[in-house]
Image: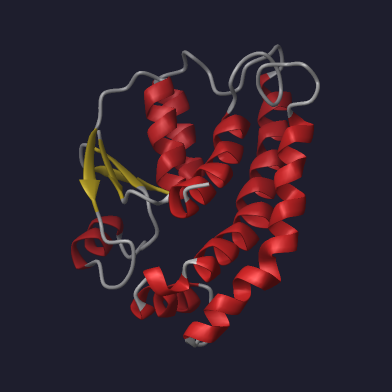
Amino acid sequence: MILHNYEFSNYSEKVRLLLSYKDVSWKSVNIPSYGVKPDYTRLTGGYRRAPALQIGADVYCDTRLIAAVLEDLFPSPTIYPGESMEQVKAQCEAIIYWAENSLMRPLALYVTGLHADEFPMAFHIDRAKLHGKPPPSLNKVCESARTYFPQMKAQLQWIEGLLSGGQKFILSDALSLADLAVYQCPWFLEKITGS
């Protein structure tokens, strides 16, 4: 197995943790975090986001698909613990949607705004293009830190609420895919800001 990823990709971290949890042997290929990725996009048929998991000649893009493939190939330990796999899967999907859409977007905009001058302008232009936005000015990117801080802060507090029931993990005393999806958010914050 080969994971095509880059170091500060939160979605790559989610899959790296999943591979480790399932005790799967894998190799890493570092890809650029932005800009033209001719070898990678050729391999993935045009997909440009990270990560992609290559198993022989098969390439799986998107962390949800990667998680499903790994769960099928390596069902133990499961990422859907509990008596009703379908119920746990549904709960995981709801939490994953929140973490990766409602929380991660403002968090990423806050972090990149806070550290705007540490990223090349080409990075900011690439991310804007990825989300269908016009190329930003450096001032506009910096402003996003102030704009998105309240949204990020409020939602980070919800993580504590998810863990306030006395259980070891979000849904129970066993790790689930929801834990990995939520973990990637504060991990990304700490990875970039160091706090």
